Length: 561
Image 1: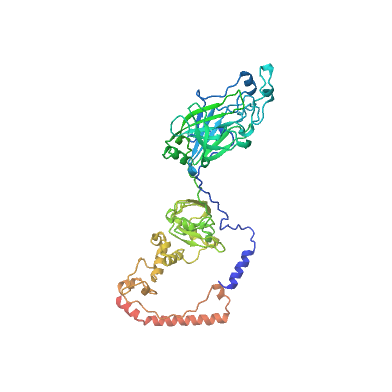
Image 2: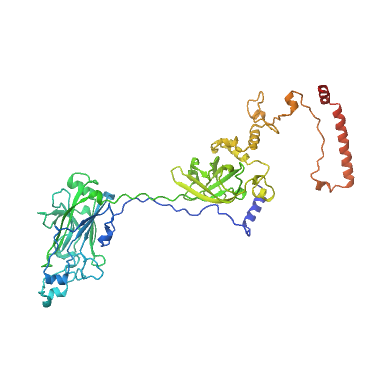
C-alpha cells in the first residue's frame, strides 16, 4: 500500500459514519479470582452462640451444662437482687483450626440475665449483675430490710478482672482428670494493682473437683482473648496458638483428628462473698469433630474472551457449502489465547481445520484465529448465535459467543451480497494453502484439502503441482521424467480425444487479434475508424481460411476418413 493510500485510509477512519456500529475488538478489563483455601480462626465478638454455631458440624463441639457443673450459689435475699452471677458457666464451645501450627479456640457460655429485657447473657465477671462489671449495686452495700438483705460493705466488683477475680479454661491432654494447661485470667492479685493480662500457663490442680490455678507461664502459646464490659458482647472467648506443638510437648505424640482432649472451665472472685465460685468439669473433645472441613476451592467461572466471527465477510456465513469460517479469539491482559488447546475447540459442532496467531493493529494483546469448515457448523438460517467452547492447556473452561447471519447458498450470490461476503475470483482455500506451505503445524485437519472443497480441491492441486488441469477429470497427472513438483511447473496437459488416440496435436499459427474492451467503448469509435477495423478483420479471416485448407492437419484428418 502506497503512502498516499495509507494516509487516505487513516483520514477515513477518523471520520464519523452515521448509522454504523463499530465492533469492539478487545475487552478492557479481566478480573482474576484467587483460590483462597486457608481456614480462618474464629472471629471473636463476645457472642459465643454466634461465633461458635452449634450447627457447624463438624467444626464446633458443644459441651453442655450437666449435673456435675458447680454453679455459684448465694442467699435467697441476695439472689433476688443479683439473679445470676457474672462468674457462672453453663456451657463451653470448642473449635480447632489446623492452620499455622494449629489454634484451639474456646467460648465460655453464660446464663441469660433474668433482668435483661432483651434476653442477653450476663456480662462475664459482673459479680452483682448490675449491667456493669466494674461497679457494685448500692442495695448490696447498704442492704434492704424489706427483702431481708443485710448490708455487705465488703462486696466488691473490680473492673477488668481486677483484684482476685479469675476466669478461664483448663485442658487435660493425658486423660488424668486434672488439667495440665490453663488459659485465661489468674486470680493472683497483680503487684501494685497493675492490669491483668491474658495468660497461658501450666495448670496446678490438686484434685478433679478443685479449681485450677496458674503455674509457670507459657507465652509462646498465648493467642487472643475477648472480654468486654458490654451487655451486647457479654461472653469471654479465647484461643491457644501453636496448639499442635503444645499437644506433642505434653503427650509426646502428634495431634491427629482422632486425638481426644478434655476441656473444662472455672470462674470466681475472692471479694464477692457470699457468692461462691463456678467449676465446669472436664469433658472430652474429639479433635476431628472440632475441626471445620477444608473448604472446597471455588469453581472459577468460564473464561469468556471476546471473539469475532467472519468479520471480513460482515459476519455472514454459508453452512450449505464448504466455505471457510474464521473465528478470532482476542487476548486480554489476563488471558493469552495461545494457551487454548486446539483439540478441545468447538464451534456449534464444528472442529477447527487450522489455527494461527493473529495480531490486530494497535492492539497490544495477541489473538488467535481458528478456521472452520462452514458445512460442519450446526446453525439454522438467519441471525444465529454461535458458541465457541474450548479448554486451556491447564484445564480452564472457555465459553464465549457472538452473532452471525447464516445465509445458505449465499456463496453463489452476486451483487451487494457478493460484495458483503468479500467474494472474488480467488478460492477461499488459497490463503489456507499458503499457510500450509509456510507453516504446516498450523493445519489441524489435512483432509480439508481432499474432501471439503469439492471442485476447489482440484484447483488447489493444480496450483500446488504447477499443472493446469483445465477441463480434466483426473485428479492426478504422471509426468515421465519429472522428479519433483518444481519440474512440472508451467506444463500444459491436453486431455482432448485426439490426444488420447495418439494423434499429433495440431500446432495453430499465432492469430492476430485486436481486442475492444467493451461494447460501450466500441460505440465511441468514429465511422471511418470502424470501417478500417472491419476491413482489417475481414482480411485476417480470409488469410486464415486459406491457410487451413492446406495445413498438415487437414491431410491427416482426410486420410483418416
